Image 1 (tube, rainbow, N blue to C red):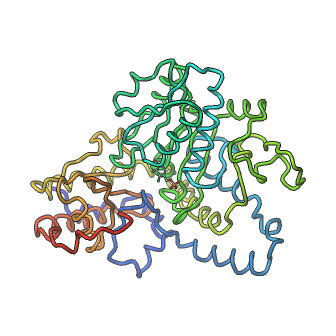
Image 2: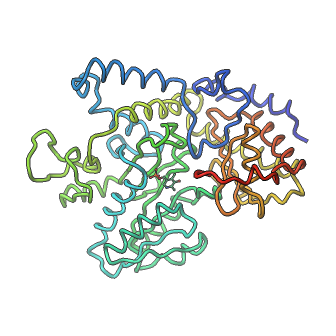
Image 3: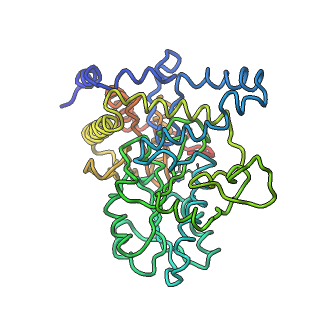
Amino acid sequence: MITRRDCLARDSADPLASLRAQFAMAGADAEGVIYLDGNSLGALPAATGDRIKAVVESEWGVGLIRSWNSAGWIDLGQRIADKIATLIGAAPGEVVVADSTSVNLYKVLSAALAIQKTRPARAAVVSERTNFPTDLYIADTLARAHGLELVLAETDEIPALLDERVAVLMLTHVNYRTGRMHRMADITEAAHAAGAVVVWDLAHSAGALPVDLNGADADFAVGCGYKYLNGGPGAPAFAWAHARHLAWMDQQQWRQPLAGWLGHAAPFAFTPDYRPGAGMARFICGTPPMLSLAALECGVDTLLAAEPFGGIAAIRDKSIALTELFIALVESHCAGHELTLVTPRAAGARGSQASFAHATGGYQVMQALIARGVIGDFRAPDILRFGFTPLYTRFVDVWDAVAQLEEVMTSGEWREPRFNIRAAVT
Ligand SMILES: *Cc1c(COP(=O)(O)O)cnc(C)c1O
């Protein structure tokens, strides 16, 4: 039997423990809240408030428009992109920070389709039926516009679908609902063997676990700034392309569909004709949001601060330990309450979350838990989702969260009508 004392001992021995102090929740105000939703909205870094205040009051208020140069605003996006590159196995200059994940997906999918355009027999974009809906909507819209078809498959059917009809395989590395993780290198290799180009969405993996885009020889990737990167609500997202595709785009003078002035080779020449910037630079469309970028940099810096303690590999080790502990505790303490693990049991096949299905009361159970200060989320139709963010989640938090879940289940309080009122965001 694992005890609460065991969990406290693990926290004392945790090499990443000191990194929790980087977050506002480590302060007294946040006492009593156990946050297991950093996979949906990363927690607020303690540094962000002061940074935003400085950007507003000093850089904007005093520096005014001069701050584009004097405060380095114009270079901030690329500086952050190069930091993110270190977390995802990309080289400096291969990543841009811009727009939202959805918009970036539209842009990189457009590039992937352009590369495959000389092969008209390839008429399919393949993805997973359980992929995050925005990815599917974007891919479907774009595929239709290009006269292609979006083909959706169950996870295990994908390898068999990879043949000469597939232009693009678009997958999310870690499934948002189940937490199941794809074997990026193997799937990429299989897709390449079939002549397909692969687009990866790293929304649930960047900052949560080691990603090696170049090592996997991937083609394109996008990812989210407000989940494990702690960039704040609606933070800018990122996009990456392999150097071979950057070279192709340069050679073709390829323009992305949202060719805007800041992706131009010389924006301040103000010429009427568009000339794409080199490499990833063309993926910028318009003026970057400075307040959001400043917050994103604070968020990314919380991850880089783990470097002296083992970096993303140490984050992954702790993430596995946290999810193992959570699964074991739920299954022992909440047995008989119809909670079914939907996340892979094999640690190597899951991301940094654990999801349990509850056939009849998933939404209500989560609401009852949130009322007790344990914050996870619900994904229709039946999934209770818990994210584990090793920079700020402690082993004792896992223990306490399961103790609350056990009380919610054994008391039956989740059946109270007040927990069945649906909010807009679940
Ligand atoms: C969170 C998430 C997104 C978010 O897209 P936005 O454009 O930021 O709303 C996209 N794809 C996946 C797989 C996600 O998990």
